[in-house]
Length: 348
Length: 248
Image 1: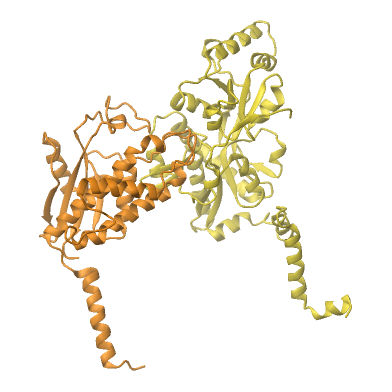
Image 2 (image 1 turned 120 degrees about the horizontal axis):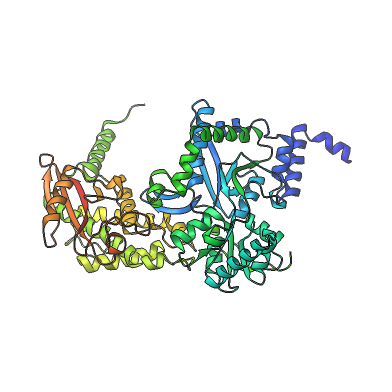
């Protein structure tokens, strides 16, 4: 029996199944099966409808604390909860989606994963969207295939904090002198941090900034912000990170650290960033829908109220976690809960 | 299909016996009081174990804390035995009434489930305060237990931080009475609902450890962001309230 004869024995359906099986086996472990599925049946036109059909919105959030945007894994009288500004935003989006889906309730289903894995999981199709104080205006090769909504937070940016008063003083004096000489701010920041060990959370906008601009500093890459605070070897002189997050830390949690400031305590902001909801590039309808929701929230003043609640008000986050937090499944989190470590970046 | 009369009758007898033992057995006041006392002691033992391990749970430098459901259960059994002289591993019928023998293992199970669920929270590294404290443990354990039982277990206080722990009219009256007493009081037990229900309110008093969050300057915020109550050691903190229908 030759190959041609064998082909005639198999039905069309069997041949298609066999082909699909071979392809899927060939692509196992390559992370390409989703791509193939997308090629055959792209979700481009029906991303919103598929969310309506399943009644669930798969949302990714960082397992690392990005307070006040994400307070991950808080224990409450209701069980495990995630709360924070980003959680409140997710609630608003899910509520609007329920209306969009002709009253069919859409429940947000949270996946808590490492910040860097959010990008991977979205690309793999495990998430419809993710939020975690993600800077939308930071170009990075790791963010290919993703797209951002209009901003929901405009006053982000990178700042530095230190535990050593002499470092704070050195930065302040260096920048003051540079200002008098009318030197470029970035150049003077580079000079101020030269020789110091500067920690960033890998994959964040601070990582991108430090890798690009702080050539004279010794860069330390940390798996999370808590890891940077805890690191003794390598010892950390300065931590770079998101201004609202580090501000929350030094004001409420780690009062032994202080922000690097200019003269008269003026904040030293090194970038201007705005935070957005992240979707897959091809999720046009979902992104358009989210943009509409954010615009309405902004117009109505509700978004400003949400920002004020989390950034300015004094509050008990466990209480908010209990009353308005979102539950999450423990599966998939266990392997991520460890904050990880810090290591020298080496040449990049 | 015809069912033979003798089979039908046998089934009816078995059903009625099962029904009586499962749901309609009457409970004496004495048995209900003993059961309520033991349930309150067991819930409080769990709270004490959480409190005793609070530094470990809130250690930001440790990932796996070893505060597993099994570890917790071992400590609870020991604490409970010390308080009541009852061994949870061997519930002696001579000392423990039938209702308590039925319910104590359920509360142990509910408490362990809470600790199991909280593992992902407890074992976070880099986060100091996780809100896994005696009160939140107790609320969850009591709620889980009550969902599976006709007996209701609840933590309550005159000014609870958790609105769900707000006292009902009966609890409010008892708590007010307890708050005016200068010395520690034994559990208060009364029949309500025309004698059909037993209510037991077992007071909890502030200890030194509680004062980290509840003591100090009233209105000042504690680590979780709640305003402190300005409490002092030995003052009434709240109570564990047990409601047992006597006609079960």
